[in-house]
Length: 280
Image 1 (cartoon, rainbow, N blue to C red):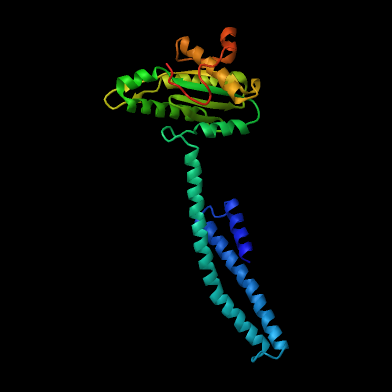
Image 2 (cartoon, rainbow, N blue to C red):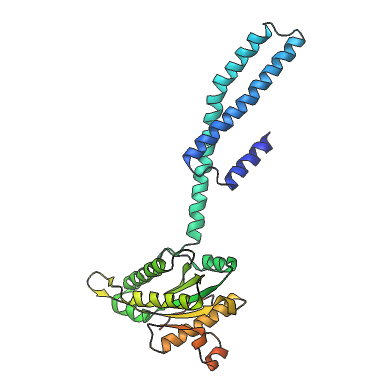
């Protein structure tokens, strides 16, 4: 019996059955009624057996009826209360677990996905897509001129623009420092590239309030195609080389991996997909 109850609770947790207090109430009530129904049947069977052996001191029908009424009237409130309390505990634990999982996948400053969550999304994606790496231009100079709070505000501002432009099913993440990654899914190659260009333009036109002064930042971006690379490291390296070229060619622009000159294409990426570095 204990094992069965344990399995039922684990099954409820796995299916998110206790997602709301209304769900908890409904499950507790249905379970209590079900348990009492079984109890009433066993009560009647017990009275019949006792009557057969002449051990029942009262007439069978009235005795069984009174027994069933007592079991129902006392059992349902008691069992419901116990199950409801247990259900609320499971509900609270489920919420806590969901929040913990969300926090473990979220970059706290920008509110975007973090690197781990982005890599997980990449691993599960199927179909046409582009990887776009965005990097804030002259980020170190911004910090040196206005302080690290200004850098934080710039990151938050850029993140808001990217989130607004690349809505679901696209995947947006901050993968380190002033660097962002977007998995642009669906559409044609040219449309995905155009969307990245629109993001660069909108970021350049977004004013950032630094308190005493307003400023703007620009970003550079590199694009690589999902279908052209078998591993994330290769995909990232291609987008990173395009980003490096966009930076060295004047910044505030987006370049595709097909625009990379062959000597640069054969060279190594200027940083790895695992560790971000300060960009110009």
